[in-house]
Length: 452
Image (tube, rainbow, N blue to C red):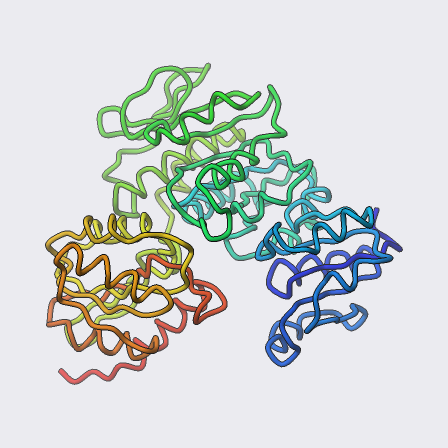
């Protein structure tokens, strides 16, 4: 399919490197490109095979002529001139998810949404593993889709997290089950408007047909509305009780209703991950799994044995009577509001990072009495301080660097307090991604000396 083809891969990151390695293995003549200079990319490029051409420190536009295909990483916005240049030259442009999809065998469950998609994808994958050893978990969650597709076969189940960035560049991508968990303001700097952001999210089901399933959050009006635009069977999940086919709560139990009747999965008291947001994630994963053909016993086992996702309300350590919690996955205000509501002790919160065009008034309004102080960092520092002062929250300080922020938060905290990293912003002003930010946070906390 790709053997002998000349392919340009744009973006030296996890997805780009995965795509380049996959194409090279398939016999393509691969060139990988990034606008960043070589010295900034050495750590990533060590993974690239010797036979792949490396052209970095230049625009992709200069390399498109003579190519048969261009594959872009999700970090590459569709507004860049490379897209128009490729169109003018008649060279197709696809994303890494589209590339991997064309080679994936078995059934795919694709999961998107503003918040909760990483936990839901990990949980769905855990359920799949109870049902079948031939399970893969990939996409925006960590493992590039390109890294796993050649391992799949006709009996494989793949749980795939997809972001709006990845959905921008699909063509024929067609999951057997798609899920949209929720929609709130996010990535407006990239998409320009909520209308465009929602349009990208809706692409997850644009190729589905009558034999496919779309899982939607009934309790979220924006996702519920999406049912009007699909050609497949809609299955809702809800924290309330619903009729018809659904996953919902009845008599404090997670249940699934289908054509074959009423199936009880577990009592909500048995769910090992706390919080109302995780109850939604469990309901979504149960619905996704059931309509992918997984039996209810496997769904129950997968849920009850599940451990929390790294970087999402992850307890790190107790140092000098202060608990440190890593919620680096809190990359927008709604995700951080969830974290704020989950705090059951006096808390100092670390906020700030890359500016995605969001406002922070709603976050400050959501502060509970447990939020005693804040440390503000990053590009969004002034915007967050403005919202804090407008809402009368004056117990905050700013920090110039990330390590300084962690130490200042510890100094503001007292015994019995929690220091919560939940920035409400992307990480790109200081880090490669939220995972690196979370790992650095854990390293800093690990180095704090015990003095008690």
